[in-house]
Image (cartoon, rainbow, N blue to C red):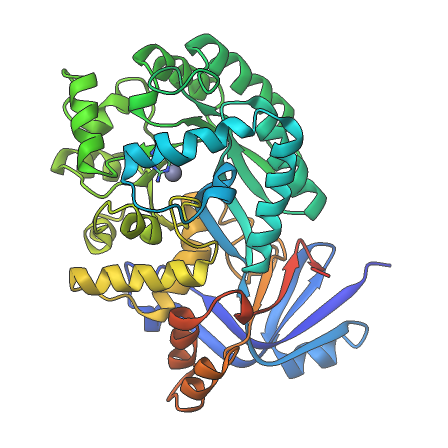
Length: 430
Ligand code: GUN
Ligand code: ZN
């Protein structure tokens, strides 16, 4: 017989998008709620007392006044950069050349790649993140490493081989043809297998020739159910470089668009310094952008304009951008998104922040029918947040007027110590 588990606590519920409709109408916390889980799925949500009496067979896990949330979804990461996170003093291009490329080269060793993939996923689970969308390295085995480690942990993960055929060191370069061939083989090996999903992954225009972008555009047209992830308009130097490399392009986005690399399942990381035409095309095509706030401050990239993108109904995911970002924690990432909102004069409410880190990111990955909310029928990825995890947070929490104040204190001051328990695909993480 299938084992049934009943998780009790405060429960988070979404009925709409708090970035486009008021958060009061779309996000709710039930103070004595429950989530019934069996065979990897959420079976029911509702009042704790009703679920308890309707399901006497269920094993009860009573988390008191902790908050049961969907597992966090980190929509843009580079798992191979785990060991160089928080490297000092460089801006994007120098940072890539000084820290990132040498480390990605080390993953040419399949054993090292497997070790980093496992280490990375364990760190993210420690921080309550159950799904990531990751760049691998140029080496196909680095994709095998992350999907294998994810399958061992039961995790839903999206990933793809990073494609680069110029402006990268020998050893990290492929070709237009090998990028196409290797990505195709990896799609056939992994896409839709268990909880794995494939993202076709040109790193960015400076490191992909037009031939390579065209080859990957053709591959995406053959596999339209895959995601396509890349970078867009992160730093001004980078944008100037793209202008030099592709002088005929209308703007940075056009360098992708020209090769078919735009559409509903496209994911553009950073997207800070956008031209009006780029905003129009993102809105028209349904492409998503990913906000990486700790990275954007850490590498000195700029202030993402969430309000403008939300007003154009452009889907936005939230991400750490490990290791350009300075933390594995989606709580720290929400805090940075709040601070960038303040600097832009548009602070986000705790309800919006937690929606972005869960349902919003899931929607950007086109996974909202599988993960990202506590909804019957969805996969049971659940993060239990202790809203008084340190003395500093506890004393603020004790002085709070509402559960939203308590959650906001944990968002601003919390880290992995706030993650009391994590359930992945219906199983409690030991
Ligand atoms: N642009 C191209 N590659 C990268 C990367 O690895 N990290 C960040 N933050 N930006 C990039
Ligand atoms: Zn990135």
